[in-house]
Image 1: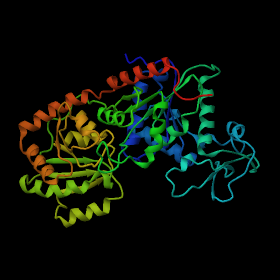
Image 2 (image 1 turned 60 degrees about the vertical axis):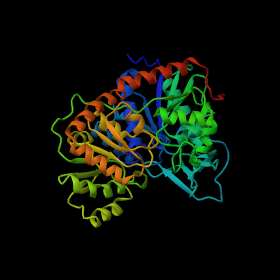
Image 3 (image 1 turned 120 degrees about the vertical axis):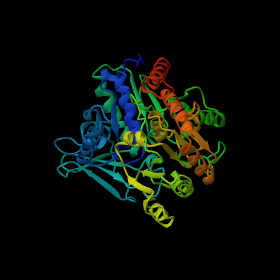
Image 4 (image 1 turned 90 degrees about the vertical axis):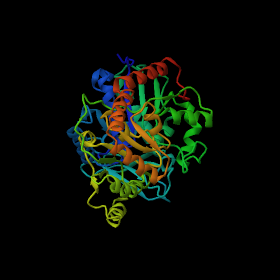
Length: 464
């Protein structure tokens, strides 16, 4: 019994779009599903709230695709700010008009109009180009009436987001003004905008998905510029959910953070049984084709693997900007018959059940969702020893850590695991045990306890 407290639950994300943002989207949707299975909101699960200014038709298509893939519990529980910003009769919805104050656009900036399905303007958003801190700008957002005339402004994206959240919170409370509401923020940019928002019966939990470090990704490495301001407000959240013990401990030691910084990994579903008849020599990668994943390391290492294990193959699943460069490397290395870029897959379980080994050459991770899923399917892992994820995931066995960036060691380890059935069987057995610590019921019990503690304490934010 996970025991989530009786409350309304909202999950807030900048966007949730099929096949975009890699493991972030999958992990966010999985957490919502697991919360539903644990009984949150009567088994309906939390409301999934997104803030990307796409069209209502786009968002409807996204929900339908997620439903087809079985990764959301109920499409009606997924809502978008801009879908709801339009009044059916035209112009901005009443909650948005009520939030507006007198004023006009910033004449020094271009604006992007967001229209309803009939083409009538609802809001105009300031275009803030080439600025990673665009979300903090107070440049006015223009609000329109039913006749297409500007009726006022709200002060920046933060004010727009908070106005919608005020509306949603009032709606889910249904007139019970002091009903507790738990908001789980999955996006760092949004969290920064909410540290002063809400009333005394709202608790704001903040989930972390990736590293806060720049190269060389050591504990004392430079902090990513996008995180610097976030750390200044990190102790004002009612709980911060870090995916690994290593990252939580590193930030506590470096920034002197308090006990509200806790560890809640991303859970993975454990299959009833994994296949015993894996394809001999089959190695799989599951990640975006992006520079930080260092897929080229695995490709170069595989030339040596092929020399020692003639039947070995490497199937790389994922999409991204590196695809052309990686295909050229495969062709130039003479590996086209043995190494393949397979594109996206919605059947990761099938691929993991068929693989003999999963390999990761990432330069950094948050937790490493693909590695966690490999363990859940009893598939051994060979991974660079990086921050963060592999060391935490493989602490109880199930794989082999390789010195970071050592392609020769990566190749030698793959050869050893592929060539030694006894070691591979041992690692597969350990993998299932390690994955058990990430089972949804265990992770949800942890999250429920953290939520109870947050609701039992006063809010840490400076609320009105």
